[in-house]
Amino acid sequence: MSDSANPSLEELRWDYHVNTLRREDLAPDPLNQFKKWFEEALAAEIREPNAMTLSTIGLDGYPTSRTVLMKDYTDDGVTFFTNYESRKGRELEANPVASVLFFWKDLERQTLIRGKVERLAAEESTRYFLSRPYDSRIGAWASKQSEEIPNRGWLDERVEKFETEFPDSGSEENVPRPEFWGGYLLIPEFVEFWQGQPGRKHDRFEYRRNEGEWSARRLSP
Ligand SMILES: Cc1cc2nc3c(=O)[nH]c(=O)nc-3n(C[C@H](O)[C@H](O)[C@H](O)COP(=O)(O)O)c2cc1C
Image (cartoon, rainbow, N blue to C red; front, top):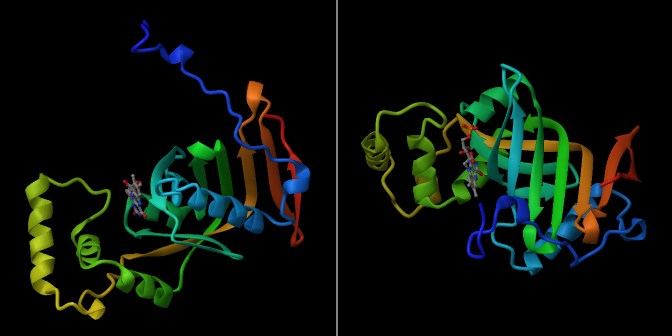
């Protein structure tokens, strides 16, 4: 079913044309290529360019995806923070591999990073936790992330309970980091950069690491 105000999904498509990605444009390693694209996403004022789809493997073998925010990227990889007892936390403890996917729509770009995942050092998680706003720190204590709860009131009461326990004194030290909350580092093994092109002739390059050396190969779209 379609009309001009409501096109059918079959007709909904976009012809990509704003950029290209050629071999001569590629940085020698994917982290520098990522840095270039991420800085361009920031410059393009894409909202939350650090939002990424994190996929993990469930204990039942099913994949699960959800959005998380990248909080840093270095030569070692990309970091994000979460509740270690959440579904993703439990899945990552059992099977410490993941992928993250960025879609920078206005630039017609997608970047996929796959690799092994490690917990960040406790001091690193604490440093970031203490930099977060008071409400976010209380929220981390209040939420039993991924567990069933009876109603919204349950969450409001938990927030009040922790606001009483850790009153807002204006100091960043007033709400300590819960042990069940912290960061992960995703260490890239495969990194793919996808640039949309007209006529579905998209540019794709995949970097792989072999004995410490990165090499890139072009993939068919
Ligand atoms: C834009 C956006 C950013 C998010 N950032 C985070 C984040 O950084 N960390 C986090 O734990 N959850 C984040 N969430 C919530 C997750 O998508 C997810 O609902 C939650 O972590 C529970 O996932 P799980 O049950 O699979 O563990 C974000 C959601 C959205 C839409």
